[in-house]
Image (cartoon, rainbow, N blue to C red):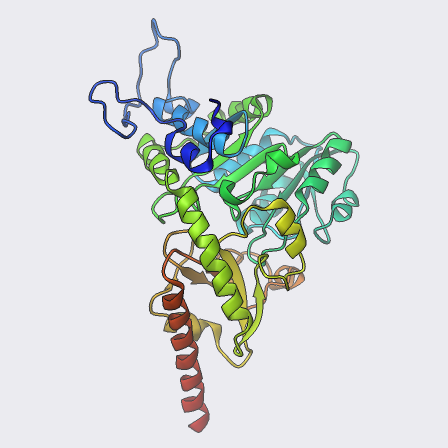
Length: 392
């Protein structure tokens, strides 16, 4: 039976696993060698060529999860992003990018592309028309991220993919926030799917990796640049990532459930000003999210009432960790203006609706009751601090 015909958890657990022929172990053996024979072999293996046994096995798993013909795994999400974009762009080309992007991707484009003679335009919104308005004769790539980081805006994947095909350009998507559990953009017409595998694929806050999935033709083009850029992943990390993906379906579905519960709690809380989560009917893109996602994800953002200091609130949390990354089994919060989007100017952040008090919440697998109790005590602590300050 083909991998794509198997269920999600079966693919996570078994596709791409390596057989331990010597000892019959239950998990993939780990091949640590960085040097392989070159004579009388079918494949000349070398880590930088993404073809060690563990690398090949993991690539099969990622491709199956994204319903793609082929995939590659990289040393980081940004290695995956930069290699994919540069594989299809040359001096004189133009790329259209979504208005709201991960800060690292935004910095790559705004700080580096002009050095290589590559033009770029950011959309004014998230509708297909916003992308269409920016397309030029030399446009080669359309790049989207949905749900977006950190405001969880939703872009119509099918409409963007159709627009790209109409203009004969490559469509790319950062699918990190959704994960393959909740969204498969290739099924909706997207050409290239990119992940920071550090996040939901890794899921335990102990792996740094990236992944790209696409057709064999597109992946061959990406591979030829990737082997020169040298963004390969060590086999030990590859082995750890394969282990982590085995539980991705179970983890992410649990995080979906918890995030929806937390979003509902925050939405009705008297001390919360705004909640951004596509699973809420109040979210402007809720119906679109329902149409193209299988689950709404474990990420949300919220804003406290102006009288409550967001920094003090985060420092007052006892169970939920203040942490730079996301998507681990543990719940974490951060301030995008101080971390993921810190390199953006205040003006650009304001244009994107990212306020200084915005808190990004990566919901883990803890009991919802415990997460609610932690948020309640942190809010009470900030209120008490405010009362003491006003009395003085």
